[in-house]
Amino acid sequence: MNIIEQFDFKGTYVSSKPFGSGIINDTYKVEFTDKTYLLQKINTNIFKKPQLLMDNVVKVTTFLKKQYEEKGEDFSRKTLNVVFTKSGHNIVEDASGIWRAYDFIDNSISYDLVENEDDFKRSGVAFGSFQKLLKDFPIDTLNDTIEDFHHTPKRFKRFLEVVAQDPVNRVSTCKEAIDFILNEKEFIPTLWDLYEAGKLSRKVTHNDTKLNNVLFDKDTSELLCIVDLDTVMPGFVLDDFGDSIRFGASTALEDEKDLEKVHFDLRLFEVYAQGYLEGSGGSLTDLEVSLFPTGAKMITLEQGIRFLTDYLEGDVYYKTEYDEHNLVRALTQLKLVSEMNDVWDEMNDIVNKLR
Image (tube, rainbow, N blue to C red; front, side, top):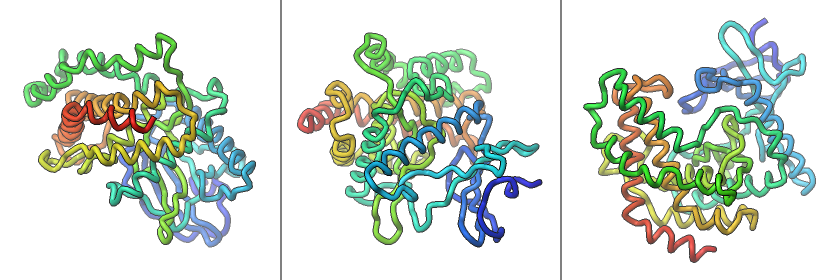
């Protein structure tokens, strides 16, 4: 039996075709006469615990549906809906890999770059609301599907090991970037030091809060749904806030080769912070809010470290289209960190006014 036949899809099969721009999983849009679905092959090189991952997705989406139901709202386009197999499972495994499926959210669109301030602010409202809706989720039931995913000190430690080993002889091609990261070594443990001191707590976090993981209605621009829940697990709220800024407050895509086009937009930082606070509705602590600038810089730096580590290891994690693709990605992140450093006082002033 082929993969499509095993899922409880409604109607008669019409067609399937590749869909989206994700660099991790392989995604297909599958059309049936009654409904359209997304079928994905989970990248088990990245997600080594796919069953735990899908258990998290089911737990979180079920909890979100309950929140919307209690408010009397239709949740069909407000959260992902997992399609189970005919035998009641949330994944299918065959020789080609491990597969899962969702209802396709019709007439929706996402954006790779911020087209206007209002859309970015509304994405902040969306992720802030996600945090608020899940504030009472039983955190101890959520699986850590990728160990130490946003543990920046451990990412830094791994980076140092790879620099020392230089497995594919690339260290000499990026010494300036390596030195830039080394100069941030005092900053890197900031959040984990606060956690270990009992001042920060771990909550349900999305862990991939890029603008393109927010769906809008194509016609009305209404905010619909947060997607890509593969990395939902316990984490810091600041990880989620920071990743949105890393991606959305940049003036260029994360693989822009011309660094003259890559800038950190302070105004977009401000409007996103406004939106996130509006959406989170008092569910954040004062310390968490005060650390918004730290979260933005930390995740951007961490992503730069991850891209550069992968480049130095020979491109074993991220899909690449050319030899220096991961280096280019790393350099855009480090350029953003550099510009955040330049306006650090202004970032903190903005947050202090919003608190």
